[in-house]
Image (tube, rainbow, N blue to C red):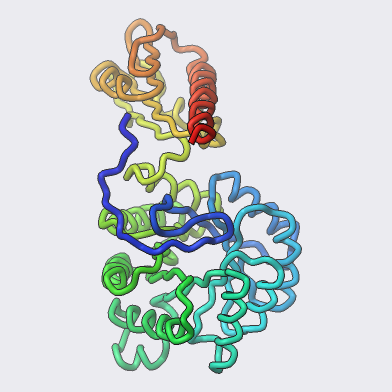
Length: 370
């Protein structure tokens, strides 16, 4: 299978969030955000670990108070993934988490207050090599912009973004990324497209407050898919009213579908019909749950009959095609052996894990030799 995407990505400057490169030629990173009470250190650490195990490259944590900042410091000591601190208004919280090892500050310069407070935060970020994320949200635009535009618009969002960017420009601070989030897909896409032509900093994609697991996934896939197809986007978060682990899974599914990331298994599975020779839906539901820990890139085809099955299996690493009286297993596009109806999931899991281990070893060898 060809893993190379035909999408030509927008050229952006690169920043570092901890040890994760964002922008430039770096892979598009996937983020999520904790929804635990930050001062509940054990619960927050556990959620960060679950998000990381799902594959997240970066995790954001809300830090609304100085007590939360102190808790953040203890959390930082217990996890390895790069952490972004989400801060609003209080510059002292930003200064404190900078001391405690934050990897990125999500704080809008224009909302901090007096110029001296902004300078202090920027000087600290520069000294400790901490990037800033400017986050423009249609739901929290400045009052003067709402008076000017009467309602949230893409134009108002861009003007808000440029206001915050101008502050950093005057302080000669360019290590920042920008998000332009709205719950309305058209507004968000329009805002991102407009700002993408005006700055060269990395763009953090998201459709904010997208909804629950199903509706939010659909809305995010449509909006982010449009932008990613345009080559816009360097990092992303899927905002769902659901377990943050789902945000990571959906994020990687979107990127895999566009061949922009190859992390994990890309399943090709039919929706099933009366031609199926085994329970495709039941097989897929169980199989996906069993192998979601595998991060090695693989294509696995699970097709219920011989109409499309052989064709899909021949371009997959592992394929299962339904047949009568026996189903057929394909390995690397070639028929390997026949299999009955029993132990389909067990057999597929074993084959997938063997193939993943072999491929990971090959990838590791390439890295060592390079």
